[in-house]
Length: 177
Image (cartoon, rainbow, N blue to C red; front, side):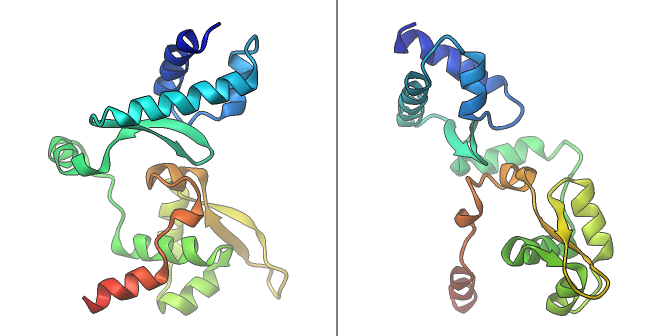
């Protein structure tokens, strides 16, 4: 199959995938094609897709490829979604999620030490929404569960990986302006 025949197939597979689709999965689906050709076609497709400067973009997120809306149109999307039920996180849940994202793996007592208040209900909410996952047990007295962010966290916040989180210095600059 030529690259020009391959690109629309890749586009529909990326579009219909509920989660960012990994190259490995594309290789399995398109087993008759060379992985290098698939990789090149995905890169060209992303470049063509994103050069159009439409309302959608094709990005590598959480180890896979996804078609999503461009950030500059979030106000229009927000206006549209106002009629839908809210899935917002409470301030306590957001604070707890931020501590986990930046300090992971982290235990509930460590979160309590940082936040100064109990985070048990926020932890439950974040686990229910699959934004955090248990990452094992800490080797200390009581062996508390350690938590870290999940793949769903990366997807929900549109991050390729944790290195895309804003730095603490960025927040300090915002606070002083």
